[in-house]
Amino acid sequence: MFVYLRFLVFIAAASVVVHAAFLQDAPEAEDPILKFQINHPQNGSVVTLPLKVSCRMSVKSIELYSTHYAGMLACIEIQDAETKCNPVLDSDIVFHELPEGQHTVRAYIANRSEGGARRHLTETVTFSIVSATEFEEYTEDLVRRSRENLKLPRDLDILEWAQQQHVQGQGARHDLDAALSSGDVDVPRLVIGIKTAVLSNFPRRQAIRETWGKQTTLSRVKVIFLGCSPSMVDVDDERHQQLFREAVALEKVVYGDFLTGELNCEDSYRLLTEKVKAFYQFAATTFPQTPYVMIADDDVYLRVEKLVSLLDGLGSTRRIYLGQAWNSVFSRTPTPVRDEFHKNYLPREQYPMRELLPYAFGAHYVISMDCARFISKNSWRLRGLNGLEDLSVGLWLLTMQVPLKHTQAFSHLTIQSCRNNLISFAELSPLGIRAIHANLLRGNEFCDGFDRTTWNQYKAPSPREMLSAALV
Image (cartoon, rainbow, N blue to C red; front, side):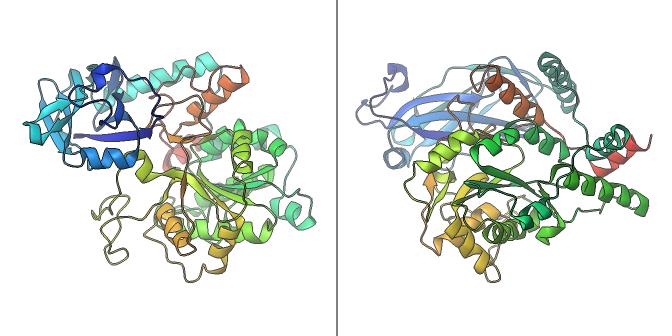
């Protein structure tokens, strides 16, 4: 059981008014930090272990921040438990075996040259830690109440949906291949490939189709879900495998927006790079006149018209690589994960360097079609980095000398707070996606009613769980 801390850094204009409490030990003109506060957990929140504590920081510039605070420590203090500190530019902090119950937490920066003097001490946040079972019950109750307030039905898995289609009768059918081959498709301004797990993530696909995905035709944007040949590892019975194959085939026909076997890939995280390469080949040959291609996760809410406006304002449709840059978010250069049991493990033989090159988070990034065409033409020699497709794409584009352009309009729920001016917000549950859409339809702010738990908490059903429900 552990807690770890990440510091999130935002560039702010020098004209921002700063409260004196944030600048305790350094002259305002010299201190690059404008604001420092705990982002998660929030006051009164209920959490379970492991707990990710995030702090939000606004700085005048990343360069000034890195230089000024390079020798200092980032600390997080759990009252009546312990305090741990790490170098401020390497700020993951782990607490072991925190007891259940109420706690308070605060963060600060310590100056070792001044005997550990505290700077930028945050306000105290009170929260409660409960067991995993209690947290699951608590979360389920929150989600149920949120659904009732929004008048939303529960999410169906792919087998339940297919059964419902057979009972109700199938409506209009859409054949993606036929539409493309017939030329019955306008040249889109942007093609979005949404990475998705074929069997388990049907509820996420439906949340997108029924919310922001419906608005894409008005903005000349094409959304395509990127599956592969579905993995049947957990499905032993051939009859049960056939149920899933028929459900997937039905989804493809009903919606006409789902690629599976066409991408000639396997549905596996470690093979994600091959899926993305295959999609770039598909996009470059199918939509050669389209200027931009986007890769996104199936847990994002995207404001399509605002993204198109952002791209139109770039002044160029070539050599574009736009996204949420890791080093701009965390104000430090990322390093490879060498733990072979970690999801983002990067073997030394594949990447021997000590620091990672600039890349955009894989949840949402845009490249221009000339870049997609380069990847397509050279796919046979472009090697992926152990399934880390976002890092792989950044490395491939570096060979073209295409720099990454960071945008603050893209964000992640678990590492940054919700902001009303966002264009893309990642790590959302299907409920979170629908809640944002309901806000915008009602004329409310993007983040109205934001709840970090219900907007994020989601457990995808396993094939066995789906079969158990379908065969009752």
